[in-house]
Length: 480
Image (cartoon, rainbow, N blue to C red; front, side):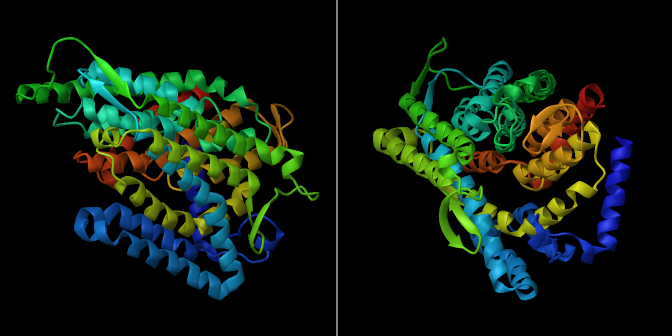
């Protein structure tokens, strides 16, 4: 770990001292036009607003989020267009919006809509034992319907069962740790980085090798959760709070269960989006993915378009076939998806220089050891999109020239190195609210339901106290 920290410090110093030599996006075209480090300022500024403004100007932030996003996005786009030309600026932004943000927000929208049409009713009250069971189910489910799917499916039942409690924000924090992140490591369906690995030759069920690591993390984090939750549960009981249970016994009723069909549709759409690009029908003679030409080299691929159509159809059918009464019982509103959609469009746009510099420097970082791959991939995935970060270091590992390991389209990658990259990208998305898509969604839904969630830095305090020690143990036990 000391070597990794020394390396990161040296890298940071080198980049700061020589910002003009920072490399741009992959490819010869980008290499001829280097991107300076100062273009990352808008990304840092937007993150600062997300972290600080809800604390010092909550009412202003609530009503002016689009203005802040537009300001920081323009602060990147205009200088970029001035130095590199409006054509390249337009192409960069459209590439980001069409091929990254569009599928991202449509997937979130679809799962948000479908899960909002499923409600759980009954006499099961939130207690440390019940919460442990729910978190365990959610963690194991995440790899099979995705971290976003599991999060959206279970967040409302968890909130309902713990509605009687005063101290419950910690439940949401551990929910994000486990269900929204760590649980998604076992299949390519679980988290987008693993889907990208699958499309580059990593076998579909290879990720099941990560089960011992996931189980170790899950047990350890659940043990910590139980201790914290029991303490706060007893505090609530001592204050006279009791669950509203009309009759003894445990009766649970799930309404809108037919919506599981639409969740299966969405999962199938995600799998197809990873498989179709490799089929000859969807490839041009030059090997590019066929699609609708947008601008310059920006193309909306037919596989992505098929995914979008299936997901939107699932959302539409879910609403058409489900009683509005169920959404009313779920306190369903559009606020959470609206907030995520606004903030993440700015994040996706302004993080482009940081991703470009990372892509350009990936092969020069001198990272070869599993523990280095785990921490560097993980730390960067905490603040940048974990899918391109995963691809950067998978590509780097494939280009190193290892002679043994797993054969991918990018080269031979040792199993331990691939394990480290995969775990870093999936696990450490839990370190911040913006580390993984469902994190912010869970926070927004919890806020809507009257749960006072930790601030951006408050949440990071939880992750530093709970997750970082667990990840250090992972380093010693699995990646040393």
